[in-house]
Length: 494
Image 1 (spheres, rainbow, N blue to C red):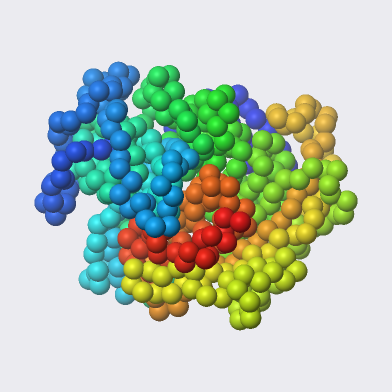
Image 2 (cartoon, rainbow, N blue to C red):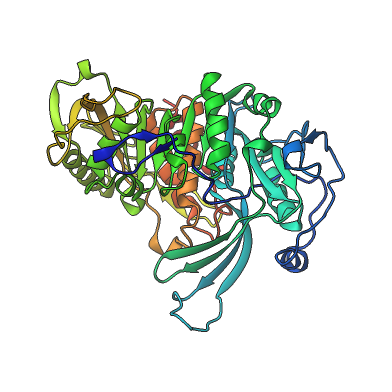
């Protein structure tokens, strides 16, 4: 089944969708991985047949006898056991998606065609949307489990080793003959851009997730997160999660094959800046978010990140609670301006609330390079509104699975609106924005499973994302719980 990308003709068609973009993810090793300088480059050009020597008690028969899960392996929470992290059992967060190895080259300026230049810095780090987000949540103290597939190569060993050191549980990472995914990242420091080229690894298929493995994955899970990749596997696991009553959060970075059907399973949706408009063909963000709400009746809220502008949240409300009409795009523009103005001013009271606008003046986080990061502001509408588009909706009949049949009008959307500005970090301290969105989502995962109000989770996410930008790569500068001001973190839980 496939959800089309035009709101004016939104419908579900029962058309089989092939897995368009293969992605690979990771599984774990108990031995120290070989040095990347020699082994990894060798493995880029040939399949490795490295044998796992420990804890091979699970098998994926559909992928061949060589595919193995590291069942029974429990990853210690090495980094999360801090003074700020609870020693009690933490809610279980499951994530299915991409884990890869990044080759990061920082250059003075982005090269032109046929240019030759030298790198200013070259590093290799773990990457991948899902793996990055789970690492961010784990460092905050969450109990995270990765579901993905990696090759039995040295890159896969490096991926697993780094994740386990950050407390991410890898017992559901499948390893098979072939290569693990890797990517080249060109980081233009002067222009503030990053360019990614991904080479997919071994393919993760629904046959790799038999019923008993799915049951084990979802056992005691509090939340399941999908990064929008590996959609065939994601749809299978998401449907199983819904049957077991486990909430589903989907990240939508860009339109992909099968993503529409996955979105139909979502309780919560986090999107990139451009996804809502590119997916719905709407001219404004507000109109696109309304369209998504109408197309996805199960979704309780949508958060869209806006880079330097922060993020916006539209949360569904009961139609009975919405007495006034409001054009969503106008509300977003007004609230972002007001929140930005409040954030740029110095308040005389920490955490003061003025007309629903909350800002923090002291440093909310200190990076590993001693950069002090101040939280931005949040602003929430005091009531729910009947959300309207910038232009009247087309008067035409539509058949939309989920809320009616042909001849029925699309439902109205009632909702509350929250905006959060970006955190404050000195411009000269920003090294690389790789993984900023992933770290924001990791903070949302942590906030959701720790009963944190959404506006506070968005504020925390902005702080974590800003801290992450103070070093090269998607994870080195991700803060641990002890790096975040105790008063700020405590206030975020109120």
